Length: 348
Image 1 (spheres, rainbow, N blue to C red):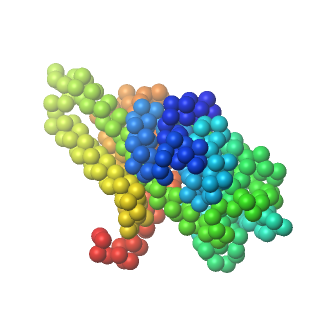
Image 2 (tube, rainbow, N blue to C red):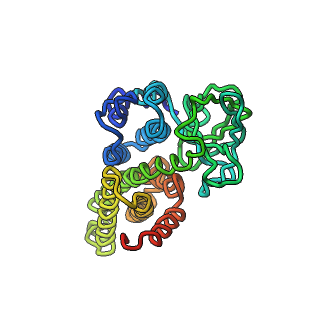
Image 3 (cartoon, rainbow, N blue to C red):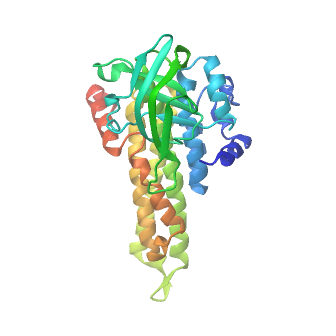
């Protein structure tokens, strides 16, 4: 976790520009899905490290912005917006990933608060975050209706964890909570309303996940065009071979379609249109699957040179894989879309 980078991004105005003033930011209004997409796409095109930093900071703090009081937003989200503190979004558990309604981490009443016990895993910025927006089960036996959101301090007694090593270099880890106490003032929104808050947050972020991978794929496409123009085979640039030029045309077309879908979903969120969950799921699904295809095709255009450790495309190939899984796998996005189609078929 790169605190210097996070602070530098905040000092440049990018982080504060994504938060309202009441949450320590510089926005006069509330959160804009379009602005989030613009920033993440632009950063991912140049630096996945910087894009990840912005993505995790905002994802970790936005449940507080969306459901917390002004006092909570200023106290907990404000330092995150200014780059003074690091945030994390803690939803996934060992047996509750795609099925978020299966959360088992317990929130048991204790005086004027709750005791949290259980495990979270694959949590970005864990175990070193300063503030966690964490979801736990306060009511047993009622599925998604029994989940509550909490704000948990990174130095809370009973909280521990360890980092995890994944395919790409990403700050991520496991959390263990052993009777961690949180007061009533650390409850986010309504008791048993946490699942709705988590889904509302993800509806906002899924288009921006799509925007981030579009940035990566655009970088890959530009690299492939440049390579096809300079690489010689059989006495001419490989761009003159139809197999290569048509591949590049297909990559550019799919990327443009993904971009249009992402920003359409983001604009729909900002207008509070109907069917936001479906449109956000479509945007994430299509963009992440397309980006994987585009980057893979760019490697094919380059050949073995793109597989060398440290090559741009080798880096992007590792980075683009995770977005098809986090914040809901491609399979769960299809399930969200399909369920909504049967509820609102006329909007299909």
